[in-house]
Image 1: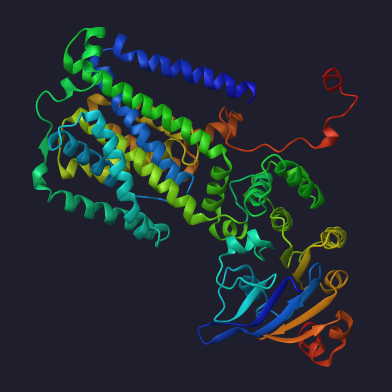
Image 2: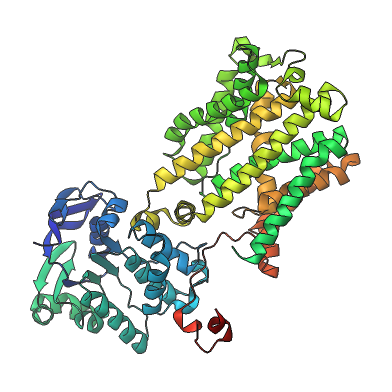
Length: 239
Length: 351
C-alpha cells in the first residue's frame, strides 16, 4: 500500500489554477523528486500535502486514511514532516530548542530521549556548533539546514523538502545529498522539490514534472529528463 | 539546577522575606505604596505572558481588572461574602469572561487583535455601568467597616497592634505579595516546560509551529484564560484597598493596561525578570520625582520610547546581553556532545 496518495487534487487562487487535477502515489520509503519552472505550483502542492492549504477538490490520503480535512498539526503527528522554501525558524529560540519542540510535539518523542535525538540530528545536518545560537541570528544557508533538521526532528515517515540545496557550494551540496540519502536509507519516504538537478537525480527514484499546476510527467529520472516536452520547458527556458 | 540558579532563588527568598516583613517594620504609607507596586507587578507579569511569550498583544486587560473588582463588590454587597473570598470569585468571573472574549478576539491577528480586545473591554465597561445594584454609572463603595471585619484582620491587629485599617492594609499587602510570588513561580515553571517552549514557538512563527505538531489555538486559549484569572484576582484585590468602584476607574485602559505595557516594555518584554525591573523603575521615578507633579510620567514615557527604539528587550535584555548574566534561564541547554566527556579528563575519571 502507498504511504501517501493524492487523488485529483486541485487548488485555485481566484481565477488562477495553481494545482490542477494532480494524482500520484508514493510508496513507503520511496524518494520522489519534483521539478518545474518557477510558478509551476510546486510549493503549493507541498502546502496541500502538509495541510497548510486545503484543496478545492480531491483528497489527500496518508496510509489510505483520508486526511484532507485535518490540520497541519494532525498531519505532522501522523508522520508528515516538512521544510519551508523560505525558512521559518522560531527566531527567539535556540537552534537546539527549534528541534526540541519539534521532536516533543510533532515526533512525540519522550522527554528523556529528545535531547540526544536532537543533538544527533544537529550533528548530521552540520549544525552542532550552532546549537545554542538564536535561530533568528543564523545566516541563510544555516537556516535552510535548520529547516531540514527541524523536519527530521518530527520523526516523519514522509518528509517534504522544499529547495534546500539552492545556493550551496559544491562541497556543501555533496554533504547535503549524503544527509538526505541517509534519511532515505533509514526508510523515510521523501518528496523533494529542487532546482539543483544533479543533486536531486542522485537521490530520487522517480521524478515528477509540474507545469502550470498540472502534472506533465512522472517516471524514471533519466526517462523524464530525456522527454522532449520536459526539454522544451526546462532547457528551453534555462539553457 | 546549577549554582547560579540556586543563588538566585536564595536571594529571591531573602527579598520576599524582607518584603513580607514590611508591615511589621515599615510605615503604613510604605505598605500602601508597595501594595501598589506588587499589584502592578502581577498585572505586568500577566501581560508579559500574553504579549511577551504568546504574541497576544492585548489592550483589553482592563476588562478583567474591572470585572474582578465589580464581582468582588457584588459578592460583598449583594451576597455578604468576605472580601477576600470575593477576590477569588472575581478572578473566576474574569476567567469566565475570557471565554467569549477569546472566541471573538482569536479571530483577529496583530493590530486587529489589540483593537478588538480594547473594544471588547469597553463594551464590558458599558454593560457594567448599567448594573444598577452596584450604582450604575456612578459606582459604589464597600460598606463602612467591611475591610475591618475581613478574615485575618483581627488576628493581624492583635499581632501588630495599631488600627484595624492598618491591619487590613497588611492583609491585602500580604495577599498581593503571595500573588506576585505565585505568578512568578508559575510563569517560570510553565515557560521551562514543553508547553512553554511550544508557546514561544507559536509566538515566533504560527505557521511553522503548526507544521511541527503544535496546536497554537489550544496553547493561546489556555494562556489567555489563565492570565485573565490572574488579572482578575489583582483587580479585585486593588479595589479592596481603594474601597470604591466606578466603571471609569475599574475599566481604565490607562491605569490597568497602558501603565502595565510601559512597565513591561521598559523592564524587558519577553523576559521573566523584565516586569520586576520595570515596576522598580516605575516606583523609583515616582518617588524621586514626587514633588514635580506628573513629571515622572513624562520621564517614564521618554524612557519607554527609548527602550522601544534602542533596547527592544528592555533594560533586562540590555543588561543580560552585555553581562551574560541570566540567573533564571528559560532556555533549554543542549546536552554536551559525547566527545566532550573525554576519558582523560581527571574530573570524569574521579566520578
